[in-house]
Image 1 (cartoon, rainbow, N blue to C red):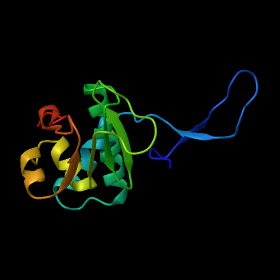
Image 2 (spheres, one colour; image 1 turned 90 degrees about the vertical axis):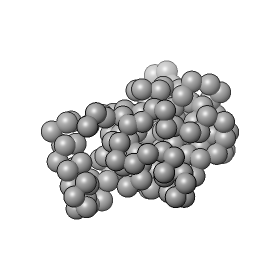
Image 3 (tube, helix red, strand yellow; image 1 turned 180 degrees about the vertical axis):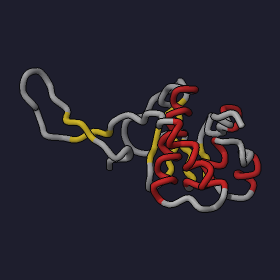
Length: 142
């Protein structure tokens, strides 16, 4: 599945070994686009495009803050990313995973919601060692 809206072909040597697609890495978005999308989100007027943009942007910031592959953060249907140094998984269910919806992820990442509150209210599912990401949030300054 393509989580980032773009793919690139994988080549080995001079010729393509297979015609497979891999997701392009998440990248922070232009602040001129993020600001208005975040304002619409906070006003309760965010559309699907705003949620996708903010989800991917904030996951890119998380990966930049805590690179690695020990924990997988899933925000279906928009994106997934791996973060935190440690054992990296490559197939199947990871040993540590966090899954949550886009509004919850965005609110956590911008500091509008505390991790403990989201966990207590059942707004996220976190399993495995090191899956509490509260110490890394918020990712933005108010």
